[in-house]
Length: 161
Length: 286
Image (cartoon, rainbow over all chains, first blue to last red; front, side):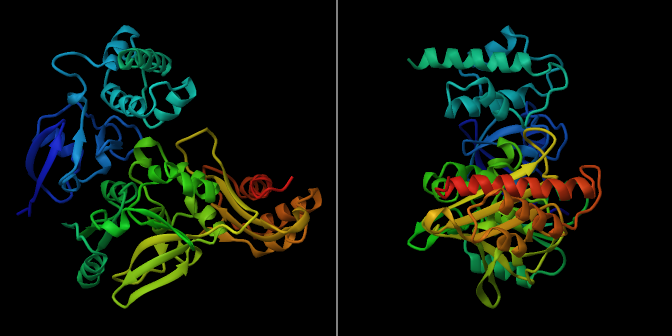
């Protein structure tokens, strides 16, 4: 029998409770217990970033976080990026710029890009490329992703004004 | 597997001391969870130290800095005072992995993972950093270079945890730097690396120096002969050549897919020379 760990946490602003196995990752909890399947498992070892979520505001690989560690923390996933049915400028620009093909890496890119724009709404191309270095895409060649993030940054700045 | 998240260091050390079987400290988890996933380790107990308040902060005092063992490397880069005092150490810590990894990884974890290629370790060794260790017999403080014993092995005894890394207050006219070689610009493991810390005397003469090399031996190497090569000089070309030669002589690397023995040995000298130049400029030398 597994001895479960009871966890009370906040996900996308909502209070959530779950019981998980002590060695279950946050990614497994999100996908298999909570039905939040936006975060994907690519490598499972923190190299590809497809499972990116935020933990207390910092972008992390949810495959390298234990579900038990989320106790009392605040988790942000791709499911929380749009508000009231309105896509985030990043999502709009990803579509507009065709910054995705197969789409497996896209949620991770969006979460990581959101974390970047939250701390720097006017990033240079180099800053964008460094900030997204932990996210791998095997389809687009990255160029369209970088352009989409740059365009979204412009939208975010316009909105802030 | 049992997961424990104690709120005091005493409780954490007690859990580890009492536990039977395979026990691991969880700080950022960026090494431990990868090893668990790969089946390289099967922990019976994981002790998460991130709930211990004293381990979550960087504090500055009259004697220097204390970096709690649970502080993520990203937070070091956001700490203006630490960055100003020890730019080489902070740059080294910020080179580890991606933003995702930076949010989690810690310098204490980087040290205790005991990889010879750990980025933050040569910089910490050069800076004279110390590890504060808590165990069943109380607290002890050791130079960071005494913690790794070989690839994946440390000198920590059962029940011992690194609680913090301390850095001294930088001496006047001193500077540090860290450089690594990787075949790309980010997200890679050092093929060779070098950390240098210098203190200058009058007329730009090097008064004190510590040089450490990464990924050229079973542990990060402190190179006393490199100190001898540059102390008393103004870091002219002759001194730099001697520094490189001393570093090359200290190397005992392996051949692997990331670099040959010959390549690692030569590049160690090159990086030590370049890092020394940066440290010299940061110390106020010309």
